[in-house]
Length: 275
Image (cartoon, rainbow, N blue to C red; front, side, top):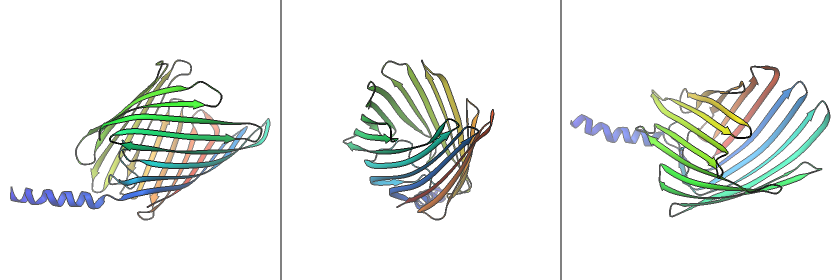
């Protein structure tokens, strides 16, 4: 009994030592999609700041399933698209927003704007939610596009703790008329010896566009290195890898294609810094 009593504090200290705390995240992202009659290049810059520190769950890439920290973010991207019938069409996209938690109440908003030269559009979102406890969040998001009707999406997020940092997370969402419904779930667990597994699934059903699904997962060889795979209903798949040079910088790469479209290829690179 004395040995077990001594081991518990040591295990707790070991777990705490493995966690890293961050408040600022920034990334530079490049995407390229290439098909027989279509080509697109996208460059993006993204930054997000949390007003309280976020802790990792072992792997440096893994954070809590439910966010409960106030934050602000900004995104800029530029895409260049062409096909057999059109010359290159450049589009600039901007988005800013944030979330504020006050006494477990969530208030959020965002504004996005896209400009392709000959046309532009903007969209505003407003969110209101309540963090019932650290493992249960309910929220409604109103989306107000420049040329369209306001839509509402209701959601609930739940984290089922499995011991340590292991968990099963579930999110259920639906619009106000129940024409669109979706369920996402994520499973995260430690495999021991500094290895981890993350797996997820997405299911949706839309009255106008039918059903869709995709699934995937990541295997962590240690806190710094991982590989992953995705597969969707429409036979799109992707393979990816991520490597942390240290606790602040990482580089990830991804290749995607379609099992039924032999001439489609997608490539992604992402450089991320965090402090």
